[in-house]
Image (cartoon, rainbow over the protein chains, first blue to last red):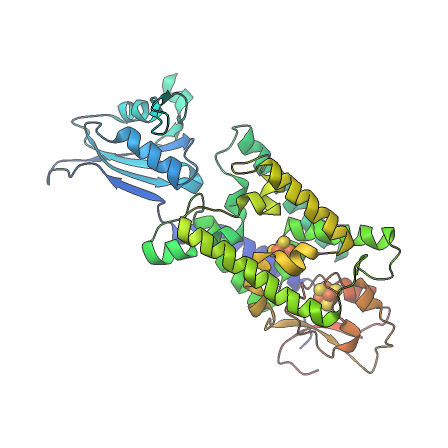
Length: 135
Length: 264
Ligand code: SF4
Ligand code: SF4
């Protein structure tokens, strides 16, 4: 059966739309790190950050390292391709702002033993640009 | 159709360049890799075995790769002919080579005998694909970045792009003049991955022997060097459905796009 020529670009556009639109169905994290088991029955909260500097599994692992040992941080999950980080925390112990500061803090470089500044910069906290929070 | 295809190729190219520059300037956290379907194949192993993504790959890469497989099952390598910016550049280079070397067709300066060409397309591309996937799946890193023309061209000097990456890209561009579409024909791992599906694509070009005058205009227009004028139905897995051949055909209805299985 004859096919019209426009079917080719139409299929290309449909495939691109299906790919971009269907991405959410395949959402899986790049990195998950548990810091502490939270006591059953206690309330937890989640803070979602967009972090400049988180762009792959390695950098996400490093960002997770920034929260290791931070009181109240329970679980770190990163989606590197979107620079997105979600931290589950105990609101009785810490806050989203304190977690942001921990992420943005100096990063210890294991190979040189030195600390590096400005490795991570949080752009958004819970969907709000950081500048607007500061203001 | 020719104009529409050019417009789509240019739009993709501009979008890719803008994504690269915006990321490099710190205006966006989305890199140009996010929209590469090959990243989806690279991360598929980690996703299906551990529900994790590899390195900087994510769900958009994987979803685009799956959508590409669907597209290829119907419309062959239409991705290569209508979307891929590297394919577009390679095609334009081929047209430039035709002028430079005064060729009637798109074969460029070096002609590879048809048999060797077919064998090299399969063997070389499969080897590159196996190498890239093997290295990515064992290291958990997107090791191909520095070699990938798409990433080197559009990432605005992205992560892992080194001086040798540009040297390699330059070499490939020179090669693309002498041997048009050399990257796509012999090296592209994504082309290798979709080729088996493309060969069975539901849409295909059909030539009507009753109206065809055997002028060979379609052969000369085909960027993939397919001998359209000798085929009843173009079953080649290399066909990108670019429709250059139908555009070049001087006879009405000698070359038509058809669904597989339909009446001739
Ligand atoms: S063969 Fe590879 S580089 Fe060439 S157009 Fe297809 S995907 Fe793009
Ligand atoms: S056979 Fe026709 S549609 Fe297929 S690649 Fe060649 S010119 Fe394009």
